[in-house]
Length: 376
Ligand SMILES: C[S@@+](CC[C@H](N)C(=O)[O-])C[C@H]1O[C@@H](n2cnc3c(N)ncnc32)[C@H](O)[C@@H]1O
Image 1 (tube, rainbow, N blue to C red):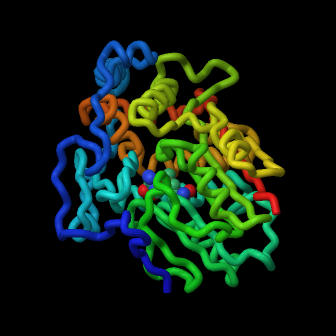
Image 2 (image 1 turned 90 degrees about the vertical axis):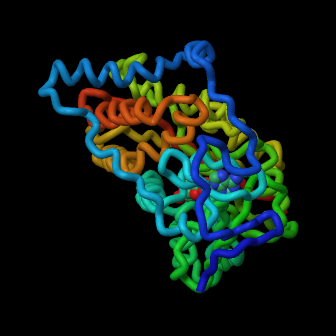
């Protein structure tokens, strides 16, 4: 049976039976964010937050008068918030104090379910595969999954490699407890110095670490040290900028603003979302000393508009993963980092959802998978 347990003295794990009520603040121990002021937001090409409510009202007058806000689900705190010392921020819970972690993603039930859908969506991007590295199934003994989220990648990998021992780490203990016997989960901050011994792992997986890493070169230096000679490290990350070849992603639309919001937000709290744009995976792997570095860029449509069946399927699953908790993805960056009101954020989310489902908008974005080998 796998476990969720604190790994190092840094990991504080479950604490007192209460969640901290929320001032809009970063996690305990993390730096305090001063929201971007209006001039800074304008300089970054961001429309004022009030724009989204005005647009919704204007559209209601044009349309049938019904509200575009459909389901701003009562994002009730999960059961776990009553037993772990989580922060609550605008009705969503976030991890407790661990290292200097400052995760922008909620860790409540609604978000964990969204991460489960994301796992499937990311598998679909890779045509059903868990990884692209050329692993030798007979030789893989020890595997690390950094920022494992709801843990499904680690669980699926453990099923596929029953002789390997798989460790998944995260700042939130949100992984299931009924897992294959060769999986365990640990609380750990991937931005801290890793405490694993040199040359421990045959494979280190880092999937979708956008907005959580404060120094990508350091991350890959840690991975290089802890990887066995001949072992592989793989990183998959999505681009936050949405593009179109026919101009249908219009400047000033919500999906155009999405990229700017996350890009500026990440800069502000010191964890980049522009991982693809800045080529951080490849640069970090090269600098750390990995060799035979390969990369693959995968186009994912925004929605189901694409005529190619496989591309449309990639778009469908990513849309389902995003829509499973759009407000959760926006909560920290929009409300805390940008200083938008929860109401303004809801109007923005509603507009994003609407454009994402508009078949006339032919948006897409890129995924980049990069893997490299530690020389023998
Ligand atoms: C988008 S999820 C990715 C989940 C998983 N890797 C996957 O692909 O399904 C990002 C995860 O990173 C975790 N996280 C955020 N900051 C972290 C940190 N400093 N160290 C470790 N995990 C972190 C969050 O708790 C969240 O579960």
